[in-house]
Length: 234
Image (cartoon, rainbow, N blue to C red; front, side, top):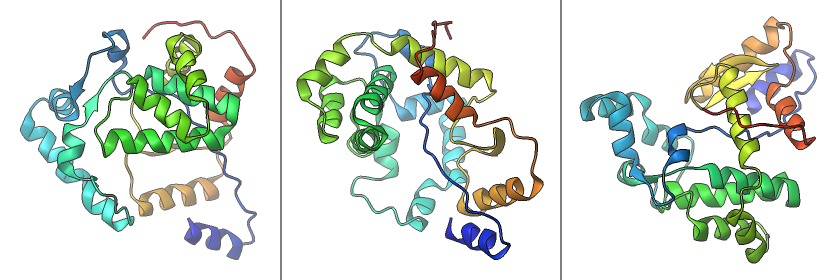
């Protein structure tokens, strides 16, 4: 966002601090209640979601995912419409648990390294995000001990907190991702391009609406402080 930073500097406005806070979100909450070996292809899920193969194809065309990826400089072997359609979808609860565990034990930077590893495994190599080998591999790539990561994944630690965090996100009215909020207010919803995000940032910077606080940061801080997050169901 160099263009936006330059505009703020020219107007004598202070720099905007940026913090990264990952909050769990389930695209398909019902996956959590399925057997461990359950999975379906992304194409199957999206066809069901949009009602038909034709409707899904129209959505893909409108999203312009591949052209936009090229515009952003994304050049990764295996990044293709075919691989994206055929990637296998499963419950992501264990992946969320792992990322949170790494965040708390090794720090958010290492958790982000694991997240990037899982991103490549799922989107490029079509791996399942509840597969123990894949998850332990991501943890090891981030510097965690393989046995410690495997032991953690065998338990249920963090599961109730993850479920409650997703419940809180839904209570905010967030039903899809990506979602950009500034000052606790919805700014941009959906897979927006750079120009739309930039417009949202400009609007937020100039309108100065009453702040609702740092909603994701506050939610993350509550959970890290050890507050009692009881599973309320989905």
